[in-house]
Amino acid sequence: MGKVGIIGVGQSAFVRGYPGSIRELAFDGFKECMQDAGITTKDIDASIICSAPEYDKQRSAAGVFAEYLGLVPQPTFYIESLCSSSSTGLKVAYSLVKSGLHDVVAVIGFQKMSEISSAESQERMGRGADIQWESPFGTMMPAYYAMYARAHMAEYGTTPEDLARIRVKAATYGQINEKAVYRKGVTFEMFSDPESPMSNPVASPLRVGDCCANADGSSCVIVANEEKAKAFCKKPIWILGVGAASTAVNLPGRDLFTGLTVAQQAGEQAYKMAGVTAKDIDVAEVHDCFTIAEMMAYENLGFAKPGEGKDLIKSKETYKEGSIPVNVDGGLLSKGHPIGATGGSQIRTIVLQLRGEAGEMQVKDPEIGLVHNIGGVGLYGNVSILGR
Amino acid sequence: MAKKKKEVDDRFKKFGTVSFTSITKVNDFIDYLEKGKVMASKCKDCGLVFFPPRADCYQCLTSNMEWVEVSGTGKLVSYSKLEFAPIGFGDDLPYAIALLDYGDYKVFGRIADGIPEEEIAVGMDMKTVTNKLPNGQLNYVFQKA
Image (cartoon, rainbow over all chains, first blue to last red; front, side, top):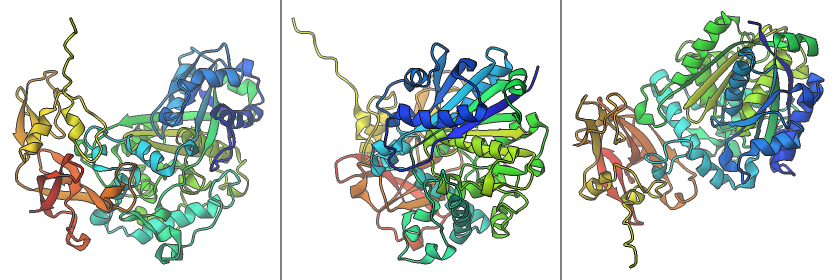
């Protein structure tokens, strides 16, 4: 059986308060992707629509989008795995193509978060946790990740300053990414300056600066079999490995609180399938919904040993010029995190990097890239490995 | 003749500041809370103890459960003090969510109000006690052992 490739990527700008409806938002990412792929809607055999549906008033957006984007009468369906929806979409598209059922599949991710208030959004996000047993205590995503941060600090001596360094890096690249929602710089000093909003506590030990920016956005990735990929595309990027895992939704059902088991397991699967190790990864996109999430990703993916993630960021090895550049597009922290669109945007960044088309963010000549995309508080983990 | 209205057992709506569940097969958990007890469930077939309690055992594929009390002390695995709250929880601020490890099982909940943050440390021993909220709802909190 042949390889499976990515022949087009696109995303909308990630913004606060997108001035349009969800189908119009989806169009933005789809249009850029179609122009990138240079194909027509007739070349697409099926579409997969990815988002967290509780933000939408529209029920079953897949059919609505397919018609709006000119993808009828081809089959379309919906995929949800919280914040990792479009990475799950990529895995399903891979299997549809690999099985021979379809030749070309579009994976469209989107989220319009701004239709509801920030507090409502926190409540919806918090309901990605255990609503029967944990939400009644007033949980929210930052507080859950804060518990992982606290456990990591207690076990390894990681400090809030180590986490702040991750945000400073994200903002370095957010400033040069024209698609990012947060284009301003963030300095290390802001975290200790009571005048700076970055230093405001959210859920101890995490501060505003440790948390990603909510945004509206869409993304699109087009997956094709080897024959079509070579016919349509000069520089197809091949899907070398896909891994995915799940765990208990509630914290009592878990044993590890200094890392995410789903990331370890999805990573191991993807490395094995691709026949590579962490050392072979030239550029990575990891799910930095909070600074601690990126720190744990370093360790869960094998870029650093457990507890040594702090040394990796201190020595700037995850900057563009370092040994393992991570989130050199600003990450979720600065580029923004429109739930269903995030995975597709991460894939887009890696595809552009591998093609050598990442502009100012370009890492030197990468051959193999990795995407780490997490749903909920480490409830779902997806790792995809891509290569030229 | 008018049909007799079927009574709905929605006791679980009393759980926590805002409950998102009203009907569950483990509704007796609420009765125990009212009596000052926090309970886990134990599979009578394989002996596995579940917290949070569940009605069904995935290991045996049976629903042969008994209640066992969460007793003694657990070690604080981690916690976070919230400065912002989701809708419906604003009046509770600030509050801390936490996880205790009892060995055979773990319990997720809140740290009791009034414990200064400098007295809270990962690894410390704490106990789980029932708590009545100002709005009449019930939950449980962790106190220093």
